[in-house]
Length: 116
Ligand SMILES: [Cu+2]
Image 1 (cartoon, protein in one colour):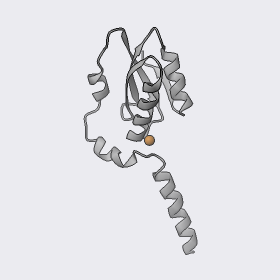
Image 2 (image 1 turned 180 degrees about the vertical axis):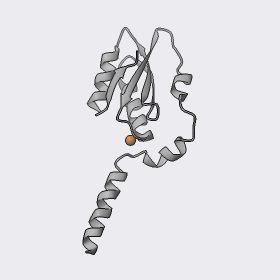
Image 3 (image 1 turned 60 degrees about the vertical axis):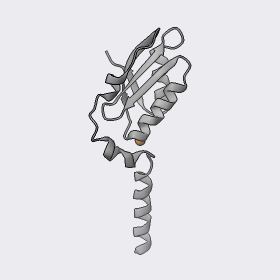
Image 4 (image 1 turned 135 degrees about the vertical axis):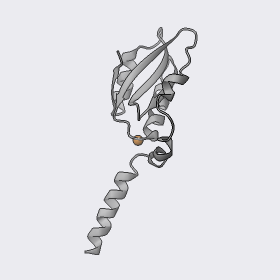
């Protein structure tokens, strides 16, 4: 009996800690949404791309998305919000395009599309 209870507790624990940034999400939620859009700066030759991203569940996901996108050649800046289900990316459009951003996000397991 007790063994089974421990197993269930372990299973729940694994589920809850799957996202590394889960703990931060509570305090992060107090901040106003839409921060990403407000702080996006356009650099010379920079093109702002707004993406709708599904699948992010916490600030850990935001960080992962930002890190992955920023590593791509031609990406100048990337900000993601799991609450707004969006990512704002500044790109050098001579080096990279929206489809490459979407492809990178989908390879991480998220679904992404360009906001119209
Ligand atoms: Cu997450």
